[in-house]
Image (cartoon, rainbow, N blue to C red; front, side, top):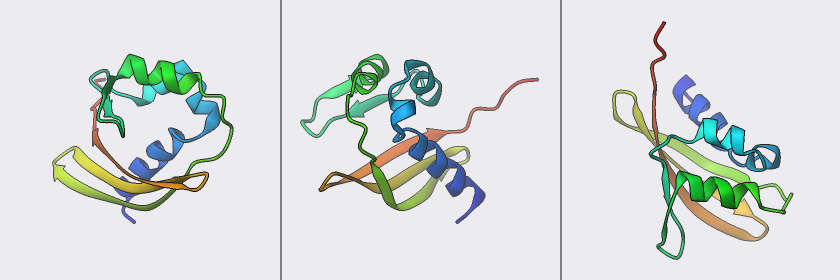
Length: 104
């Protein structure tokens, strides 16, 4: 696994930790302002809606990430593809990550 793939996987895994999921501050740092999610119902949720919903979850059960891979779309932009297992439900997931260069 490449350094980039490891870095993206670690970021995705952070989003699954209960202590991160219950922290609006940590979620806000991990998710871009233009973040949105398409739920399994097809409904689109923005960053604020997702943070509010996730941070209020009562569940402490671990979500397991597996079959992780990264595809570079262009320089600095990658597509992460993976599966998650929560209780007995397996879901196919994807996300796009963009590298931000810090100035100074």
